[in-house]
Length: 176
Image (cartoon, rainbow, N blue to C red):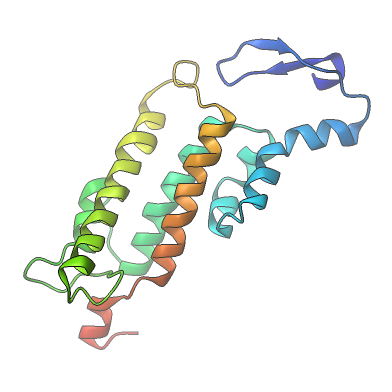
């Protein structure tokens, strides 16, 4: 389509754009989102989980796949099988118990607040982006490139924090 000076928007509308003259120009346009993510040094797991969506600049599904990757990493690190908010509560809750995952030692009020805030961030990401994309048709839930970049950058931050999380319950139980 880019050779004809046309581009398909996320909402299904076709818009006129500058014509591409070469295959490399067309490929460059198709990889714009990925390049922007690479320049932001996004976490490799974000790129891995939405690789095919990035090849076609599919912002809607890239966000959906990236948010699903968060739950997948939490399940992998904890062995839990739940999903969404229950998964976050099971993995990060520390009231009267040792959490599966801890961002820090949880010794100070500030550290405990960080843990609670991170859990709330995860629930917010799931509720705002994953659940919406799972239930709303692509044509009615439009994600612009800049919004997709910001969402995927937030998912990247979450992956880095999960990578650094202490597997507290496994340590307490003497498991690797």
